[in-house]
Length: 130
Figure 1 (spheres, rainbow, N blue to C red):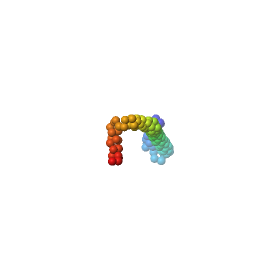
Figure 2 (cartoon, helix red, strand yellow; figure 1 turned 90 degrees about the vertical axis):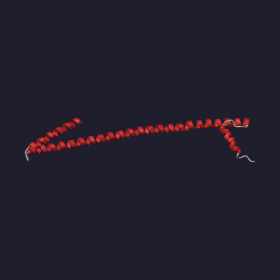
Figure 3 (cartoon, rainbow, N blue to C red; figure 1 turned 45 degrees about the vertical axis):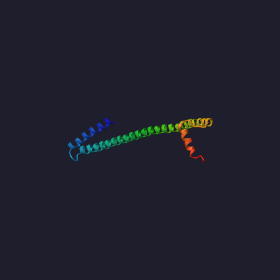
């Protein structure tokens, strides 16, 4: 495509030089001007097609970037869903088992053995009736 543009520009310059050298109003000058006009139209068409192809390339790059971003978002969403469906329920079960074990110990001995249990028992004393 660049070769065609280079050839058109060279021919345009040569024709422009021929127009300068020809006599005003002669048939050769008219023919050279018509040729110059046609070459100019071809150059403009070439530039327009290049700008259109550049615009299409930009659009393709933008779409590719959007697809990459959508893929990342999809992975993040799936990861969040997996976290919500797997990690949170299992951690909840672990906490329930821990506190269930502590409550069973309390039922055996009547006292809490860790600091959080001591805090709870101290807090519960505030609500005892005197």
